[in-house]
Length: 503
Ligand SMILES: *Cc1c(COP(=O)(O)O)cnc(C)c1O
Image (cartoon, helix red, strand yellow):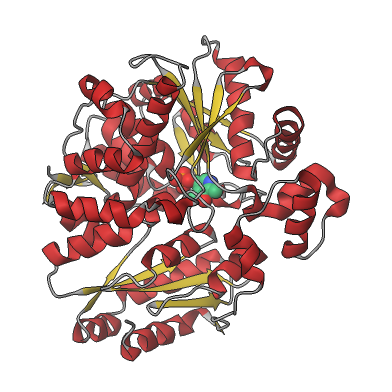
C-alpha cells in the first residue's frame, strides 16, 4: 500500500513514513493509494471482537508493519481496563419515539472523549513507524489544544518509550475541568504549559517552535525530531474506521438489520476527521446510506454541503459544544481529493484560495456528489439544550452537548430528506460530565454554580447517573503544571524538556 499527498501525486510514501511525517512537505495530506473492499467479507468479520476487527483493518493499510507489530499496538491501545472494562465502544439503543436510532458511545476511554479512540493507539503506531522510517530517533510531540485533544494526547503518550510530549493551551480558552485534567497529568515524559492569549496564540507559538532552525539543531543533537498528534495524521484517522464497522455488526447482531442492508450515520463534526472515517468505511464496502454532518452555530460545513461554497469569512461563535467550534475543517481536503477524481491541481487551487481569500467554490458535479452522500445541518445552543432535556425526559439518557447537536440534526434530517428511515448510528463523542456546566444548565439552570466540581455533584444528585472515576478523582489529584508564559516564551519550555532528557 502506497500513500500519496493530496496536493502532489509524485509524493509516494509507505505507511510508516506518512505516520512519522504527519503532513506532506508541500502542505498536502496523505491518503491511501486505494481502499481495499470488504463487502464480501462482512459475514466473516461480523463475529470479531473489537481488537480482532482493528487488526484486520489495520493490516490492509499498514502493509510495512508486521502482524506482531500491529497486534501489539492494538493490544496496548484497547485494553479493557483502559475503557471501563469490556469492549472499548458501546452501542446504546434509544427506543423512544419510534425512531430506529442508536448512540455509538466513543467516550469510555481514559479522558472521556472520543479522541481517545485514536490517541490511545497513535503513540504505538508512531514508535513502530519511527523505528522503520527514522531509526534511532525519538519523537517530541508538540500540541496546541483548545481542550480535548491535549488531554487525550497526554494520556496516550504518557510513559510511551521513545516519545516526549509538550502541550500548550490558552490560559482562558479551556473549561476548568479540561484545565484540571491537563494540569494533573502524570508521566515522566510529559509537559504542560498555559499560554497567555487565545487558541490562535497557542497554535502560532507551537508553529514557530516547529519551524525554528536553532530548535531543530538542538533536537537533532539530542536524537529527537518533532512530530504531531494532530488529526491530519493518517495514524489518527485510520483507527476511527474500525468503530463504524463494529457498530454495523452490532446492529446486525441485535437484529436491527441483515448484513448488506443499509444504515445511516450521524456525526457531530469539527475538523471532519470522524465523519471522514465513516466515509472511508463506506468506500470499503460498509453499507452506509447517508452521512449526516452535524454542526453548531459555526456552520461552515452545513453551508458548504448545501451550496458548494466554503467560506470561512464569518464571525466565530464560542458555543456550548466547543470541540466543534472550528472554521477550517482540515480533513475535508481528503474528501474533496476523492470526489474530484484525485485532481491534485484543482485541490491546490481550492486550498490556495482558502488561505488567501478565505473561501473557495467547488464545481457543480462535485457539489452534487457531496449532496448525494451527505446531509448537512446545524443547531444553536438553545436547541442543543432542549435536545439534552428531551433525551433525558423521554429516553432517560444523559447526553453531552456535542452528541445533542447530532441528535437534533438527525431529527431535522428525518423531516427534510424524505427518505424511508433505516437503522441509524449517531456518534456520541463525549461523556456528559466532561461538560457538566452546560448539561446541568440545560436540565435545571438554577442549580448551576461557578465551580465545575459542584456542578458534577449537582448533576449526579439530579439524575442519579454517576460521573466517571477519572473526572471525580481530579479534585484530589495533585496539580503538577502551573506555568503560564507569554506566547514568545513557549520555546524556553520546549528547550528545557529537551535538555532535561524526558524519559
Ligand atoms: C473533536 C471532537 C469532535 C469533532 O470531531 P472531528 O473529527 O474533529 O470532526 C466532536 N465532539 C467532541 C466531543 C470532540 O472532542
